[in-house]
Image (cartoon, rainbow, N blue to C red; front, top):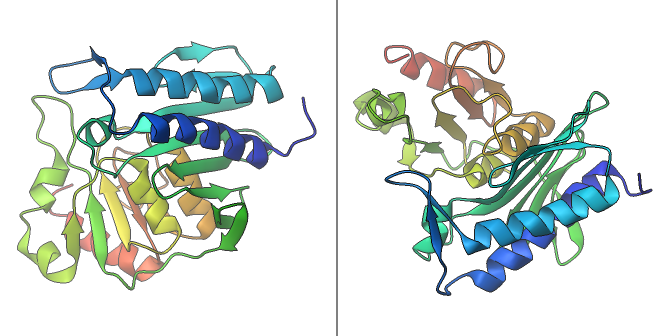
Length: 258
């Protein structure tokens, strides 16, 4: 194990993946179908290889779960990697995508979420939450001032997904400005004060798509729970809000649907 702190390994890995994604953005890329509506690109695969090279070089004894190349190793410390969270956006040249790197460890979780086209890294060592730009770190805190709430409407085929119901609920539409996004970027924005909350459905334990974002939110002091206000993963669903008041308001509004 190198002398680098875990969070610096996470940041370096996220930066390595972001460099690949940034370089590939706007180019012609081969696609590899995962389902009728989902696919990976060459950029996903290349970025994950770049991330894994950093992690395995600095933490060779740790386990890794990657979106594209799967799981490797067995250890108490596990890295979760999504090299391109928001591939459909990326392929359509929509800038809303991220590179996610998280470590779940008995001694403390860390995370780094890169927004490649802005050059920003949202990171936490489990205590501090900051944005790194051009090597300079700026400490940040959650804020509900924007009143913007991101609702993830992706769900398993053939199921009635709660996100779609919430988008048509008049009480929620009166209280908050709703947005739709399907990336960890939206969770990172809650942690750093750019959005008031994020809502998604489903079972998210050990998810490469959501773990980095939830680690950021918790470290920032945001309120995170399932749809019933219980600890995350007790039941399906995730509500991450900038403060407890916003969180409770959303739980009350979600209750008729959950």
